[in-house]
Every structure is written in structure tokens, then in C-alpha cells.
Amino acid sequence: MAVIPRNAQGHGWLRPAIGVVELSQCIVQAVPLSARKTTGGSPEGIAPFLQLPHINETVIKKLNRKKVRTFQELHDMDSQERADLLTQTAGLSSTDVKDIEIVLDMMPSLTLEVTCETEGEEGIQEGDIVTLHAWVNIKRGNGLIGALPHTPYYPFHKEENFWFLLADSVSNNVWFSQKVSFMDEAAAVTAASKAIEESMEGSGATVKETSRAVAEAVEKVKGGARLVMGKFQAPSEGNYNLTCYCLCDSWLGSDTRINLKLKVLKRTRAGTRGAMLADEGPIMEDGVEEDDDNEDGEYDDDYESEYSEDEEDDQNSKNKQQAANGTTSKHGKAAENSSSDEE
Image (cartoon, rainbow, N blue to C red; front, side):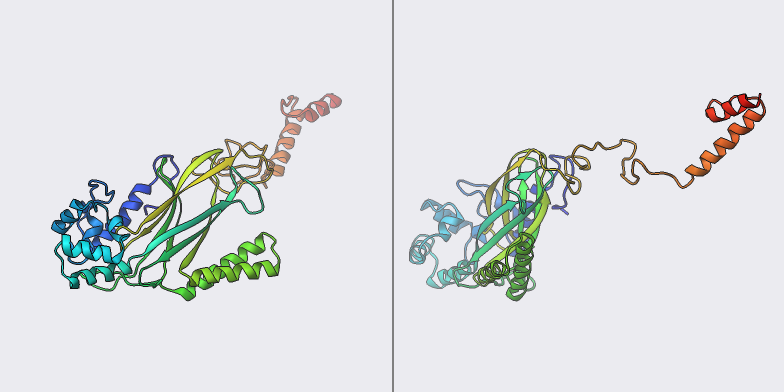
């Protein structure tokens, strides 16, 4: 519900959409939502620490005294350095440290590669159908691509799900969203192959070029990437600072985001521009104005009713009757002239 497009500018649900995923993370990892409150240098508070086994608020305070204030700082440490910190500073046993290392090796690290373009055109103009092409790459310390997260308090096995969002944080609108899964590699290979093949054929590529592109996509999928492709309509002319998010519903601290600048040019190409924009009315052909009385666009301007001819015949009969009675019709000169000739 939160990613359904809204028409009014500034009334989108980007922040509620992110909040839904963050709530899911806390439920899956049995971490209080209040633990996400920003503290010190950590934008996510102490919540990511608490998903690790044997870690509590006391241990976190000891780590903070050693200037380890964010979960990412702990995650990026060398394993030996991390082990020394946890045993000597936090007072954990070597067995506890091994449990923590297993969970850290399961956690996904995500990167994004995103492009937006109008197929067959150099720039993006207002009203164009824009093709989004994104690769979501995943890496884990244990080398796995798909995995079940560490969820000791969850009542059943939980598969990871990821959400890709393209959004405008200024207007709070989600422009595009798609669910991403790393569990089924075969399905991902099939989907990526089909999407790349259709895209290449649409751009007029040769069979050889298409085969090469499909082969590269298959290798990317097998190497731990998933293809996200979709289309959206370019808004009105302007420069847009967008944000691409990849959010995981099962882990805290694994989300990633990148900035994407989109320049939309003034419309100069002739032709029909598809559907309805979020902040504008229906798009008409260039140089054609919409008739206010024909709001739903159901009838053409030159449309004739099937009863038009009957109405015209009735009017002519009425004029003749008035002429026969010596009355001049104000609607038809033919009747008036006929009456004068008779006189």
C-alpha cells in the first residue's frame, strides 16, 4: 500500500514505505523499534548490534568506549581485530565470538548499479516512457548468494526479501518499486535473460549482440546479482535528485542507497505521450488542446450522433409546415424562400 503512486505532489508515501520495512526488520530480529533511535555517530542507533548473539546494551557501551560507535565499524573490522575487541574489551568468550562471526558472515552486503534512459533517444523528455535498468549485487562473508537469516526468536524459517525503490525524497513520492529475491537462481536467470532479450530486440540489436548481452546477464545472476527492470513516465521538465534504495526486510544495517540525478528536457519531439503524469492532467498530442467539455476523452470532436439525420429531417418538415401556414422560419432560409415563391 505504501508504494502505490500518489498524484498530489508531496503526498507520497516514501517514508511510510521505508518505515514498514524497518518495522519488519525489528520483528524478524526481535529488536525493539525504540532501539533504532539515532545515537552518537550511529544513524540507526544500537538496533543492528542487538541482532547479534550475546550482544546487549552493556556490551555496546563497552564497545563505544573503544570508539566503535556504529555497527558498520564493527562489521568492517578484520576478524582477528574484532575477536580481540570482543574478548578483551567486552568480556565475551571465544565461543561467543565464533557465534557472532557466523552471523556476520551471513549478513548481506548490497551494491547498486542503476541507469535510466529513453530507448532509442539521446535524452529524456517530459512525457517519455523511461526504462529503468538496475543490477542489485549481493555479497556475504560465507560466499552464499541466497540464505535464511539468523532469527532465533522467529516462530518459523524466514526467507530474505529485498525491496528496490526509486523515489524522490523531496516530494516523498515513490516513482518505481520492485521486490527482489536471491533465493531462486534458476528463476532469476530466466527472468533476466527474457528481459535483456526483449530490450535488445527493441533497440534494433543484432542476434549476435543480443546473445552476448544475454550471456553477460546470466553470468551476473550466477555471480550474485539480480536484474531489476521497469518503466515509468517522465514528469515535467526539470532536474530531479532521486534516491535508489535497496531495503532488506530481515536484517538491520544491510540497507543501501545511492543518489541518481535525472534531467528531464522540454518536450520537442512530436507524437503522443502515453498516460497520465502524477502531477499533471492527461497528456495530449503536441499542438492539440483538450476540450474541457470532453473530460473523459470518450468522444471525438467530429463525432456525429446516430440521431443527427433524423433531427435534421424533423427540422426541415417543421420549416415547410410553417411556410405553408404563412409563417417565416427563423431556422431555415429554404422554407422562407419557398413561401415567397408560392405567394
